[in-house]
Amino acid sequence: MKPVALAIAEFGGIDALLNNAGYGAYGPLEAFPMDGIRRQWDTNVLGLLAVTKAVLPHMRQNKTGVIANVSSVGGKLTFPLGTLYHGTKWAVEGLTESLHYELAPLGIRVKIIEPGAIATDFGGRSFDFTNDESLSEYQPTVQAMLSAIENVFTTSSPAADCAVVIYDAITDGSEKMRYPAAGGAEEMLAMREGATDENYFAQVKAMMGS
Image (cartoon, rainbow, N blue to C red; front, side, top):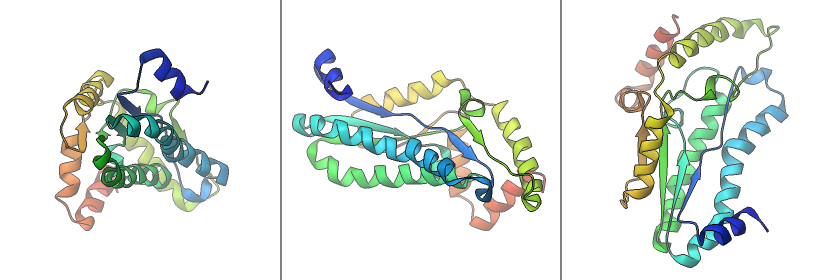
């Protein structure tokens, strides 16, 4: 029996789906082999789509349900060397927003969770940093970004703070779509939304000491 069918048999139905699987692939794009690029997109985007597609027939039949996709502040703003990670999270933002149009008439709501810096293993097991030191031109950016990332992970919020936001998003019964979730998310998103591209780039460069 497939996982969705097992869940329905065990619990009598699926009221909510939380797509939370993901990791961060960072590093110069030139340094990444294609299988590493595919792995990032398979996990962060295609896996999310596959699970959502598997659950949709059940929710469509019942004319109810909530799908919450965990994006990131990194789905609305970017940092250096995050071409792959940010690309996937921007994709999650877009596909979720578009799903709203086709699922709302069926009674299915979609939510986007946008965590900031959360105390998970994102900086450890879930952080895939790929570099090629022979690509010397990129190394100043690599070193500056590694230092900046270390500072971010020392000021992260407990995962429980993010969990509260996820629970509220799934249960509040509203049509609200986006939920900044702890770890300075609201401040970072507000800063990006209030800045021109040029001003934001300057702030990131200042953060990296360049």
